[in-house]
Length: 98
Image (cartoon, rainbow, N blue to C red):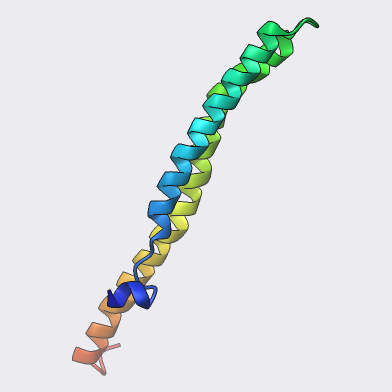
């Protein structure tokens, strides 16, 4: 509880995973909607079908890349916190060795 209240433990990486699944779901739904709209279009919706297929494939991919980039920042923060903790323990045991 102490690390949570002092922002030493981050909860955002868990939220990012939820955002990923929501983003993938929305990408798939939008892609399917675009394909359906293109198929039922009276004006030759071939381009809309193609756009729907691209959204269906690239939407989840870009969502994954975006979420991974966000998680990298939090992994860096965790690593820096760990290094800082180990360094402060080392300094307290050996004050003149650095």
